[in-house]
Length: 133
Image (cartoon, rainbow, N blue to C red):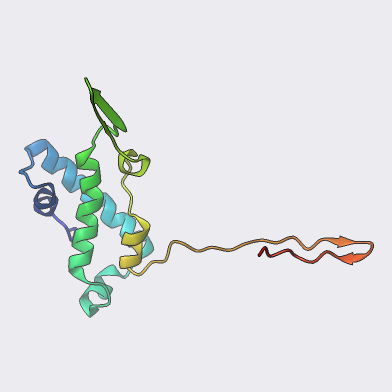
């Protein structure tokens, strides 16, 4: 059973879900929970110990599914006469995913940065690495 429910998604959406939407939301909630469990297999223990706030897990699962419910067809823009509505690529990609901020709330760092610098050796000796400035 997932932490979030279709009622949590409906509350964020600020409207009732029809039967087809409830079935979709329930299925997608199961998917997002499995996604979280792949990275945090001891999620239940961390929630029980208070290391991860259960309300945060509910919110994160519901928000991830809400992004799909709001834009089920993955539309990036829509025009009607002089009115145009456009979503960012991230908001319109129609993929079930968690944002870097959501992963961070769950204790997972996703913005690992590293660099690889070649060590060039010439007949005159090593070439110093330029670090900018």
